[in-house]
Length: 371
Image 1 (cartoon, rainbow, N blue to C red):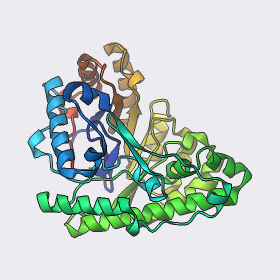
Image 2: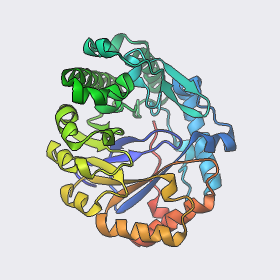
Image 3: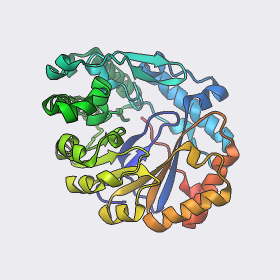
Image 4: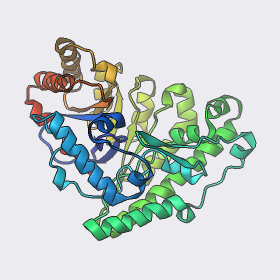
């Protein structure tokens, strides 16, 4: 286990979230996520409002999803032990809760993650933006209501909400305007980014405090910089880095989700924040440089479906041998495989990883972490 390490996990068809790394002798784990239509076509999954607001129903759904995965992949058993899954907060409202606190209503879909109603701030509204009263907001009240149910049914309020990140939330609130603000109205950009940061910290602190009252301690945070490749390194340093530092200073352990982009332009700045517990990035990043910059970090490679689907076993093997040689210990995420993905493709990918690291395919499967 890497000291201060943070590990990724994906509750089957949901967004990437994280927990503290557990002791594990394996140098590599493979986390696979499937799009909602994968489960809809196999078990009639409905990700509508009830799924996000009813923790008992959500837990039953996760059990069904685990069984569907085990039926599709009997050797790998990607669903783990279905009946051991406990109820919790994981994936409630998926990526939408923080923006919802600012009045961006949540819109649910039966075979998609919920989305915010994108009523973006105009210039005047951005300049006047204030922190919402988190504890008085109906969404926060619903999260606490769900936590009460979870504690009653399972004792501990486990699980993770997806708190997004400073730049992600600013983009949800302001759209492309946040990028033009950086060039033309820097004070306005800082206003939105600062309010987003303080609101995120207050919201996460409040939810963490409720979980702590049930005996579950959260001492880490991973910020999501999914749209960072829309800005230069210079703009990252001026407009986002100060707020990522605020987040980092607020919790004992901190990581950065860079999404599947090339991270090279921001790596030096990320390394200046502190010793990260987690960092993810795309395959075209300079992997050897990352291992040197972050020697004790849980480094996680994100592969898109087109990095895997349609590739021969030999092609996947060449890619993965290069990754193993450059990174050694790491985590690998294969994201959002849709309902048409052949089971043989997933099996072949696991075998290619096993060959590259010299272990069995079964050793690569992380135990699903729920709650």
